[in-house]
Length: 262
Image 1 (cartoon, one colour):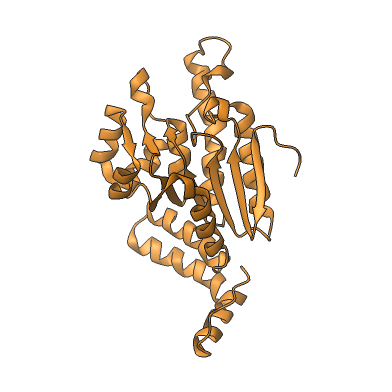
Image 2 (image 1 turned 60 degrees about the horizontal axis):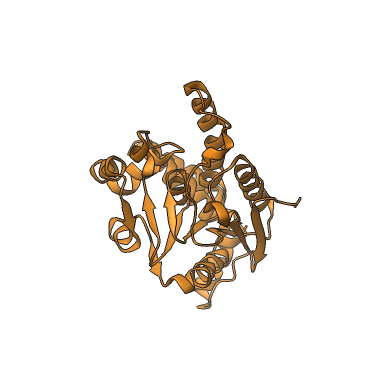
């Protein structure tokens, strides 16, 4: 892909590793980084050789949130509205819609819009010293970038409101206890263990995993009968897939399956 200014893009054993690369700014989301991140996600989505995606941050922090340095002066309310809509709707939609598992490897701070970015990932591995922080209320703002949508679905209203209202750091172990993290690992092993998990998922039936994302997101907004019908529609796609046939044959032959992702 074309040169990226603020992000490193590597592919390792069917996993695209996207590293936010503004360590001097704790990987704050500048316009350039948002552009690069969207481009990298599109590249990974369209590359059949990529079957899982890992997002992490260079240096000491995952993402410190929006880079207010992009504004030369105090923005107007209308500029803030337009910026949030234009910048974060495409990004969060891209992560939740990409038909491949997305793992966030959270190092250091994931604050503000950076916390929303972490929560947008399907799965999260946190370093022992990492934390999530709904920092918005500390400067008199409302959570944005989809943070409310993700947070209330992860922890329920009361804990979501507590995190947003208090604006405190939620450490890795607390995140694990609340279901905001799937795994907590030593900081020095974060990339190694996150990448190993992503590569393991990359060997799973990618079509089914991608459609499962669709089914879960649909279920969050619809009733049971509609969800069952939607699942049945998606099942029509998987039942005819090569990976389904391989899974059945491997089961019958009592051997590990070799999924190809289609």
